[in-house]
Length: 156
Image (cartoon, rainbow, N blue to C red; front, side):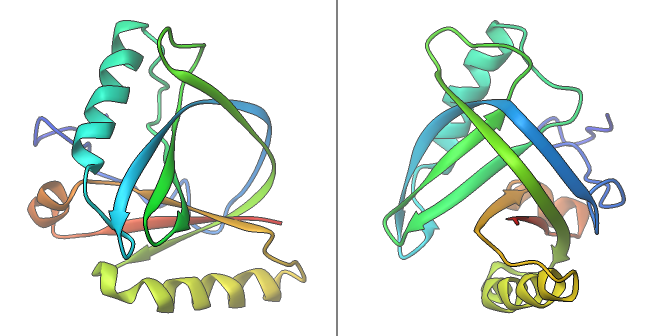
């Protein structure tokens, strides 16, 4: 995994864009992020706390996957994929069939991305039951790499 920043690895959209994922009890550690109108306030603190537990438990997956469930303007649940249960971490599982689509650009385009995902899913003759967001890099790394990729996962 290429990681020239010492923080977030460089993201390759190919394994994600336009793919279908079928998960049965996919294992995650769950935590909560406080937000103000969907702008995360403590994301860095939460991801650091979770990732420290994941690394200590040696539960890192080959491919990092952090899903955000944007439940309200005031907060979201963060799901970090793991290979086994993590001591001190809230265990969560996610099951279902998910269509994934990669978007790139500033976060202000989120409404357009959601509309694009709705169109993509409808073209597959499916309906979105739930959306998760995979923010692939932190803002500093996105700036360094020159790309801000976000993967939307639609449970169908």
